[in-house]
Length: 127
Image (cartoon, rainbow, N blue to C red; front, side):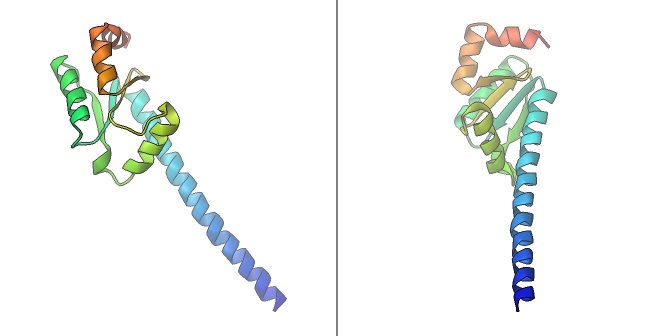
């Protein structure tokens, strides 16, 4: 009976640890995805398709004749995980989260401020 109990503990430990490993891999893949998007695109926006603030940010870039890479979190199965990564990275889960040349701009209001004070144009010219 003791041998059975030891085997049962090992099986339970493997199942629990196996699930933890899958969660860690999923989390790491979301983190890798976010970092790849931020550093592989001049302009990256983490957005939700229905969000009015996200639409406003995309419109600002359109008016500036800039084409951002947009990740619509509500259209992805891992959108929540990506928002968790953004929380760890910039301290916010809200959308939009905008990055220009790897630098975090912030949300829609922050983008508008960066346009008005010339900071966005400086960031775009450093590419």
